[in-house]
Amino acid sequence: MARPSLRSWLFVVVGPFLCVFGSIVFADVRHKGHSRSTVEPLPPAVTPVRGPSNLERVGLRMDTSGMGRTGLWGPPPTDPVSLPSITYSEDITRPSRLSGADLYRLDCQACHQADGGGSPPEINAIIDPVRATSAVVMLERMKKIGRPITAAFAQQLATASRKDLLGRLKNGGQKMPPFGHLTGKEVQALVAYLELLARVPGAEKRQLAVTEPVVRIGELLAKGTCHICHAATGRWPDPEELLQGAVPPLGSIATERSIVQVIRKVRYGAPVVMGRASVSSRGRMPVFNYLKDDEVASAYLYLLIYPPKRPE
Ligand code: HEC
Ligand code: HEC
Image (cartoon, rainbow, N blue to C red; front, side):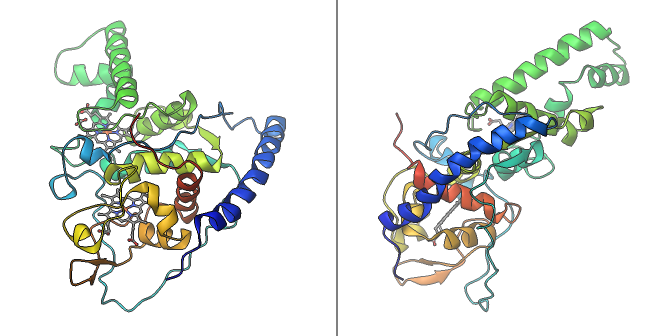
């Protein structure tokens, strides 16, 4: 298949992007006028994806870990080709609003599942640790087990749990990657949603949204989801290496594949050629049907504009 050269892609993609930067500035000015419900973000410092995949970092492979698993596989290559229509183009270059639920989808769901249940014992559920950040919940919990505590002590416990939660987000865990790149507002919106997920009383009143430039959305998705399995840099694997479990590097995705091919692979699945005999196969990559075309397109633009790098 003929693929466009990197230069022509940069032309097509970066050109409009630069124009759009102007409109982001205008959009911000306009927002300040009349949109009070939106939390104004600090301009996030977008940085490239770096280093080994999260699986490589912790010495695991896709078949020995539940991280990045959605439970959905692409269509078998024998399926009649019914190509879904891909509609990324309309709004792609405009800044968009992300709710806490959106942030959760981009950054946490691939490991912790939509309901926060994770897949124990490897991936802990987030519900209990989040509930522990609420003084009201702690009071009730201790009363129920027959060890009532004072409101002040409940508050102390809740504050300590909140500190743990924020620390875990910033630094990651044993296997969990760090999310130190999230801004204060993003963390606020995300944590409010975690509380909603964990049914912390009053959480519905604290829900927030942040307005983000397109490359930031791409960065969040690439770092929170794609980088679980895909390393930043490396050589594109040949069919035999793919069969042995190699994963193509993020740094070559935007040059080896078109934006539509990438959206299709991510959202619906697409067969890949594997093994010395070059057999078409459904592959190992899960399907992420809960992502939107625009979000995957944003990740594509981000990978093109901020080429992934080796570790510092
Ligand atoms: C690549 C997979 C992965 C991603 C992505 C991920 N986590 Fe985790 N998370 C884990 C694993 C694995 C654990 C268990 C502890 C460990 O090994 O780090 C964990 C544990 C946790 C815990 C602690 C649970 C406990 O019992 O104390 C919380 C809270 C948590 N994650 C929240 C989040 C949030 C919020 C996000 C999204 C910003 C997120 N995680 C993204 C893999 C992930
Ligand atoms: C759970 C691991 C995992 C995650 C998470 C993951 N991938 Fe993949 N990806 C793979 C594997 C494995 C392959 C090799 C082909 C196959 O087995 O399907 C692959 C291949 C690809 C390919 C090449 C397909 C081709 O035509 O050769 C693209 C493009 C791709 N991934 C994009 C992404 C993007 C974008 C994300 C984030 C939204 C992502 N992947 C998240 C495992 C993953």
